[in-house]
Structure formats: structure tokens, C-alpha cells
Amino acid sequence: MKKGKIVGLEGSFAIAEAVRMVNADVISAYPITPQTHIVERLAEMIADGELDAEFICVESEHSAMSACVGASAAGARVFTCSAGQGLELMHEVLYIPSSMRLPVVAVAANRALSGPLSVWCDHSDVMALRDIGWIQMFAENNQQAFDLTICAFRIAEDKEVLFPAMVHIDGFYLSHVIEDMVLPDDEVVADFIPEYEYPFALDPERPVSMGCYGPPFIYSEAKKAQEVAFESTKPKILETWEEFGDTFGRYYAPVESYKMEDASIALLTMGSIGETAMLAVDEMREEGKGVGLIRLRLWRPFPFTELREAVKDVELLVVLDRALSSGMGGPVCSEVKSALYDKREDMRIVGFIGGLGGRDITIEGFKYMVNRALEYPEIEEEFEIIGVRE
Amino acid sequence: MSAKQKGWKDLELGCVVTEPGSASSTKTGEWRSERPVRDNTKCIKCGICYIYCPEACINEDEEGYFEADLYYCKGCGICAHECPSSAITMIEEEEE
View 1 (tube, chains in turn brown, cyan):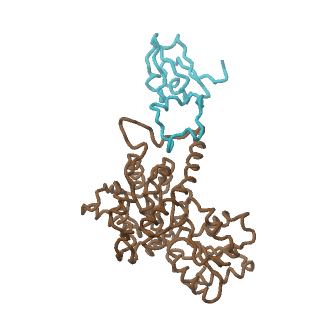
View 2: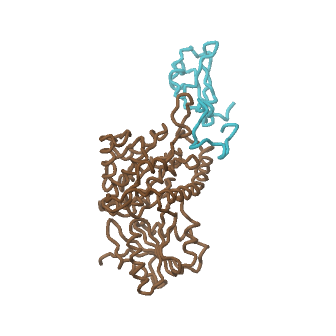
View 3: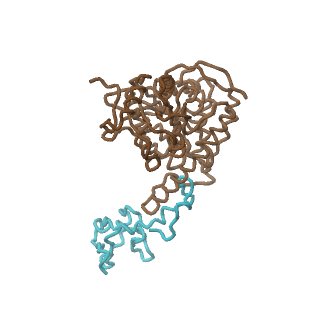
């Protein structure tokens, strides 16, 4: 197995390398912290002749996604990235590639939403994107950010998929941190990414109308067709991750477990915080607590089956949200509860919200969550925001 | 509503429309609550109604009169409003 060379690379640069290796045709993006390094590096690669692609400079994220939609409809391999407020400005256009079945690939460097104005990491921006109809996955470190970006192109462009895909990386925690990682040879990545041909690519010999309006007599049918197709992307995602593992030696799964074999208590996280959670699990294990960790790698389509399987022996599930759905609680916790409703009446699920706007969550933070959750049902609140000063 | 309606399995990828000019099959005349009726004794065949029609659904017939195509006419009444000889009246759809 060709594993490539070990390098020290910033998360943003690792993603730019992935986009170069898959030989993207069109990149359109607007700079915004903490995503900027990705597009800066890609612009540099194009200027230096390392990547033969069109870089479309635009005046906003709304235009960036619009340019991506047009380029993708013309049959190009397309990439963009954004973060926080940028994703919000891009928001209405994000529904277009998923409904038009255009395989745009994007990276989101997760950032808090204003206000107060914050450029630092949390998942507020992600949670506003739950319904956009994109395949969405979470990376935990720079290696995964690279790997999942490669996989995103192959999954999105598969003829049986043809949906846009978004890779989430935690802003700063991954985007600006230099880590050691394995960078495979260009040829191995090129072999892993097949030639891409969009079925309705721009062709004067075969004119079609795209993005037409849908009166009431057809809108429901269009949405049903989209949803059935979206739900059936799962086997291709699994197949791609399996083949990626066989080729590169690193395997991914929709739900990844750590020390769950005999765990009666499980933490559930998404994104980079999973690495701290693993350390916390190790320490709690030494203290004699039967704690394990579940990380959601795939966020959309939601991995119902894998989640139910992962928690089948769990008595207490502690869910950490890095976002707050105002007046309601943690969005991930609420979705997890929904996915497990009627399936596990004997399991307690306790939600915590933390890590907002770049606040670090430490090993002690995870220990606090587990200890607090063990007090349940004495906890009266629906959820608790941890680490807040009185 | 069009006569033959597609089910969700009949739709092309991403709702792409492969049939050229398919917008013309959409019966916008369904929206109408009033229709234009012309009095030929007043009509001077000037074609002002033809020029002003926002739906571009008024066509000249063999005798030189301008007739609205009720498959598309939405009943906006602009033709009646603009007619210099007041030859067009808007009639409630329920009336004969």
C-alpha cells in the first residue's frame, strides 16, 4: 500500500492540497476567517501553475455559491469554502445545487454566528445548514480534513449520488493548526478520483432547461424525488469510505466508537473536540467509570441505523452540542433524542452545550458533564450551558 | 393544470426539463376571473391592445381584429384600459 509521505501541514493547506490533487476545474470563494487560508493557498496554486483551474473572484458568498452552481451545471468539478457569517450570506443559494443535483464540494470552517461578533469556532453555522440537502461530514483532525475532502468529491460526483457535499472542520482548531499527517502521492489520489461527467452538462447539441420553477402541481413530486435520491446516497458513502480505507489505510464510518465495547455511559461529540473527549474517556476509565465515546462522522444523511447500533448497550448518553438553538436547547441532542425515541426507553439522554464562540472544552469539562449527567433526573433544566461564569 | 401529470419517478435528474418550449403548455388562463370581450362596432383595429398585452397572448386574426388567446389570458384588463375606442369590456367569468 502506498501511504505517501509524512508532512507537517496546516489544516487549511491540507484541504488545498486535496483540491489540487483531485484537479478541480473551478473554484469560487470569498475570503472569511477562519476559512481564508484555504482559498488563499488555492489561488496561489493556480497562479503558480500547480493547479489548472479557474478561480472566480466574487463580491460575496452569495455570488460564490451562485458561480459554483453555474460552473457545476456546465459540467465542471467545483469547489468552494466558507465559514460563519459567510455561510449565512450563502444560505439561500445552498439549496440550489442540492435540488438541481449538482455535485459542488465545499469545506466549512465552523465558526460562531454574530452577535456578539465572533470569528472563533462553534457549530452555530453548521446547525443553520441542517436542511440544505447536502451530504455533510465532520473531520476531527487535519488528516481527516484532507481524507474527507478527497472522499467528498468522489461521493458527490458518483452517478448514483450527484448531490453536493460539505466537509466540516472546526475553525482555528483545524484550519490554523499545523499537525503531522500523511500526504499521499498525487497519482494515487488521481487514480482514486474517476473522470467526472455530468449527465446534463452544458451542450448546445442537447439543450435543456435547468432550475425551472415548480408550480404546486409538481413541487411535491420534485421534493419526493430529491429526498428518495438523498436517502439512497448512504451505500455509496459507505462504499467510498471502504475503498478509501483499502487504498490509503484509513477507514471512516458514519458513527465511530471509542472504548464502547463495555461502556454503560457514552459521550457523543462532533468535530475536533472528539480528540479531547478520547483523552477524557481514558482518564475516566482509569478512575473506574465505564465511559466510552461516540463521534458522529456523517451528519447528513443522518446515520440512524449506526447510531442505534452504537448505543445499544448504553444506559446513559451524554451529548455535547457546540451550538444553541435558542428557546430549545442543543440541536444535536434533540436530533439524537429523536433518532432514539421509541427505540431505547431505558436509556437516559442528557444534553450539554459548551465550546461556544471558541471557548475551550477541557478534559475536566467532559468529566463534569458525565458527573452531572449521573445526577439525572435531579437536573431540572432541559439542558445546561457549561463553563459559564456567574 | 396540464392534462398528463408526471409522478415523482418520471422526473429527470434535478428536475431538468428536456422538452424545449415547455413553458407554453402551462395554462396561465386558469388564473383569470374576468375575460376581455370586444365590440366589433367600436374596434378600429389599431392593435394597441396587442402592443400592451403583458402576456403577449393577443393575436391578429384574418379579418384584422385582435383576439386574446384565453388559454394564456390572465384577465388583467390592460387591453380594456388602453383601448382608445373603449371597444373592450372585461366580463366576469361566471357571466355569459
